[in-house]
Image 1 (cartoon, rainbow, N blue to C red):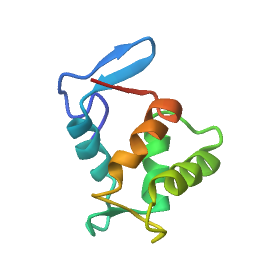
Image 2: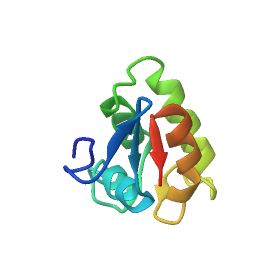
Image 3: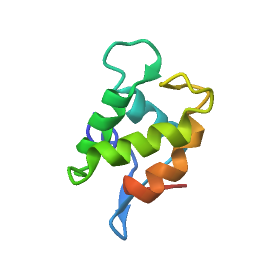
Length: 97
């Protein structure tokens, strides 16, 4: 699913894409390639790359996972996605409304 998140109402403002939290969650889960309901480091890396962030992708995605993975499982599950919002704004070019 490309950003503007499936042709929805997202818009670029100051180089950032404004979307709702629900739209972000749907977009992020589109990278759940194995359909286990969780985002792995590899899947998060693909999401970061899709936003055009090839530079330091490994470091950024690792930091995003460590910020959001509250239970230390190595995955971001549905309950932890909200913890990823700050990272998405700082490192992935999102702005939430």
